[in-house]
Amino acid sequence: MGSTLFRTKNVEQSIKDTEEPEHALKKSLSALDLTVFGVGVIIGTGIFVLTGTAAKNNAGPAVALSFVVAGVVCGLAALCYAEFASTVPVAGSAYTFSYASLGEFPAWIIGWDLVLELALGTAVVAVGWSGYIHSLLDNAGWHLPGYLSGRDGAHGFGFDILAAALVLVLTAILVVGMKLSARVTSVVVAIKVAVVLVVIIAGAFFIHSGNYSPFVPPKEPVPAGGNLKAPLIQLMIGWAPSNFGVMGIFTAASVVFFAFIGFDVVATAAEETRNPQRDVPRGIIGSLIICTALYVAVAIVVTGMQKYSELSVDAPLADAFKATGHPWFAGLISFGAAVGLTTVCMILLLGQSRVFFAMSRDGLLPRFFSHTHPRFRTPYRPTILLGVVIAIVAGFTSLSELAELVNIGTLFAFIVVAISVIILRNTRPDLERSFRTPWVPALPIVSVLASLWLMLNLPAETWLRFAIWMVIGFVVYFLYGRSHSRLAQAERTPADAP
Image (cartoon, rainbow, N blue to C red):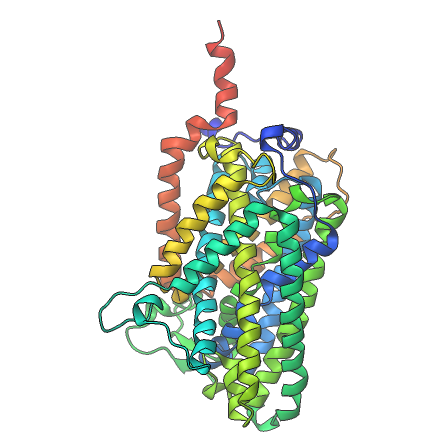
């Protein structure tokens, strides 16, 4: 049984599977397209929402350092992703990489984690997008009925029709084709980057140096009964649970990390890239550098415009401009936020459908979902299935409190990818690597430790939910995936042959 759990799918076979006509994806993306995709998904929730949450609850003005910490952790992982994506240009990202190095069962765990994490992230962002659209509509004097906005508290029922509609429209765009998706994303990214730059430049004129004091607020104890919401590392080493202080910077980094879950999605599009060995590393690293710089600049500006303790947790940038007496900026920022979250939602939807597609092509999920559209050459079946499910979830559920769950899954994937780089360097030194992670094994080990550190700074309740999530995945694998995978069928064929 142990040998079947850790059977690997060699790199050559993974690439060969992508050439089967019924499972082949259209190669239409360039390095610029990938960079735009990365910027499109990274710039969004972090700038427009999480900056205020992390500054007010965890780090104060030092949230700018939290973005640097999160960016460094992502940068270490990006170098590992870049090597794998250029060596194994196959849809599936960390799932495919771990299948080639760690084995089938670890690959299943990662794939299961990524599909659900990205799906949950899509729903979270769709709900956030809906909130900004409702704000714009309210400002214009247009109001949707409570039962169609998900805000009908009087009757205990509500369906957020805007969030659901967004997911369904983006699903249709992704079914039609990647190139159309890239064109739509290019236009939207240009708009929201322009809005972000306006915020940085205009906001710089309203900075008051007194708002930066104290830059690192002193520690504050966590309220009684809130231990499960305290960072796990504090509970493990017996510290009194607290917010702010130096540890608050790392806790905030764990929170704003949600804003960086984009560059790894670039790796899921490797199979649809014209020259993946060259373009995927450029897209991953380029988008990460651009977005980290913008994040730090926005964090410095917004905490300088308004005292961190007074920042809004829903719309920090817009409310900061209102506080300075310039409310007309709020409309512009709300528009930019809505535009920005559109691309975040679309690319998260893209990423999870590609992971689902790769797993079904390997037989770990029903192979019905592994066929591409005869005309558009996109994985339309998993895209439609997941799009409908996520639209329903986004319509009925408020998921903003589960952002930490998305973070822990992504950090877990980072750890697996870093370990996989070390293993594959030793087991397959002959593979052609157009991009090589520097300083192996030192850099991947540092990447593992950095990701683990951020995981330990997430709340204890997040770890509990993550454990439950993984147990469900184990059950699904042992009931279906282990016996239906391609590797399992290949092992049975010689024995069953007459």
